[in-house]
Length: 217
Image (cartoon, rainbow, N blue to C red; front, side, top):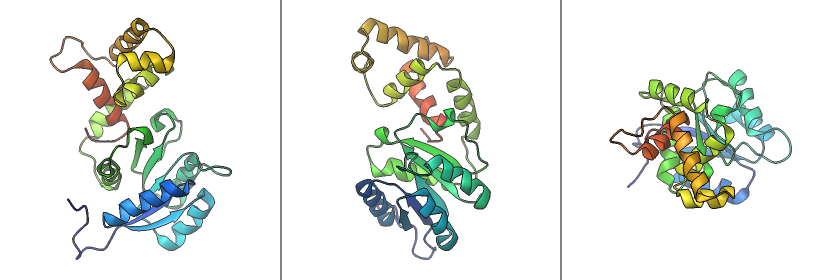
């Protein structure tokens, strides 16, 4: 299935900022095949210069860009110099919504560890590019719910979103399975999810995780 836009429409421009050459190349190839015009940089400083000449519609960046300014520094810079640019942050760092950085731009966060297909990246990018978000209320509510989680609860939610079982969560955190089960239950309760509802509480929790990151479920 092709993700390309009709040839009559101009290709949307995406600036990719990633310090790992292999990852950068894969993202560039994926976006190019999907019909985007792509410019790639390895540092935030290089990206700032590229914005002036390339005039991108969207930015795809990691948070950790090695030595020098980070992806968050780049996001803050663009909020002032190019507020029209939509932003997709792809990183292994915790949920960006937990970081104090705030911009008026359309910003979506995607955890690299949850990326199992190109379609997920393209979907997140389209969400960032969209002028108006139909799920804005749901996203705000999910953000609010996640803001009340403790760090262990947030980590447990991230692992649930990765598809880990209670046993696997226990192994990763170095705790007993019973303790992991209790942590998951407390996390679900902290999100305000009623365990008696017909929909699986664990599934509902993961949906809230994705909504908080701006990714439609």
